[in-house]
Length: 335
Length: 235
Image (cartoon, rainbow over all chains, first blue to last red; front, side):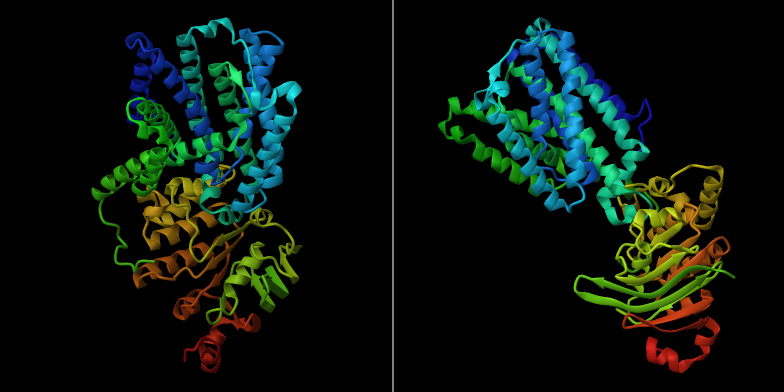
């Protein structure tokens, strides 16, 4: 969990990956792939925010999409009602983040006292409530029909938007990595592992859980703002359970509590969604691609219970341990 | 010596069960006070009640002449009471270093000195400094749990069955560490291993069916075979 040194293996791999992603639009002239990668980056940001809740604090939330929706609507409404310029776009991101921060603070304060499953149910209820409000408040949200809006002109070039989202992804990743490796991040991990024990070390765990909820909510809102720009359209489906489930599955398949895992999860899921649905043109059976998708989920959970990155890290850790001297107390009875 | 901790007629319920039915207990400063009794007598619940993890239904817990009965766990811990639970409560994903650091609220020179002291006491922790807590052996986990509770300038340490499940050679090490820690802090120990308890304890309190049945000097209990037979099943 320590902050990796600047020239660590991990950082070098990230740097190489970043160079590949920066070079990609200049090397491959594929509009579809550029859009798909942009989508992966956006959902990667959302999944990382979910990992702060699930992976680092042990909170299962079924209402994460509400923060995503707040970001999407803030951006869409402000760009439509004010003007589609970059300053308004940046302002809308800030407004979305502030609103998401305030909402996640109150939701966290109200719900995080409850035990995990009750908390999950309550977040589902609050998220459902917000969805109903969004659907009924048609004068602003246009309900489930949604509305289109103009994005700032600079984003008409998909490559510019690709780089904008990639920059957001890198910044969010670096900030969250710093966050989870900070003393505060250590307390969050301690809460996930044993909340009672953390309390008996003198930590008012509710405060830390609320901080985690705010950080996750604010980042999810950023992802929502970017998603709205990528579609140039917004409707209430952005606040539904499907979005939360996507984030949850990306996190689980990639590996909870790893931060990189959710990014890998978003790659796997977005590519699988894209190619499985694309296969339907040649093979009618893939019209039911969602069934295959379900099979992939089941196989992933059965064979990689710790997620892809989690399983790889476990293998590396076991491999490293093999070379270590046997522990001096190896004669102890197993507990 | 002054009483650091005093429990008066403590009753604790867990759900519908009346677990503690009148516990009176005192821990004097600088001593090792041992809670003894059969399995299920209420020793662990007594420690949890002191920590506020299973709050008392009635009675009073006084620590440093302050009533802490209704205080939340984190406040009690911040008053300087360290707790080492029966299952050690190590954070398996955090390294040894992080397990210790998470307990340290402020890195003052005194605390860092204490960390150095505790690492000299448990050299294995230094050896496995970057190793995940979950990968340590049972004995090392016990040492880490004790070090973590001790390092944060705890005036009182509550240690629950430190010898449980450990090999005799490791128990010896743990015992030596407790004797060493006693020089700097007051200890309340729950222990089934009477040999260990009698070697390091200054005073004892016998608990049976959730009630305090007797307390006194450890030397007195060592010689009282009838009491040991009746309440501990040894003689």
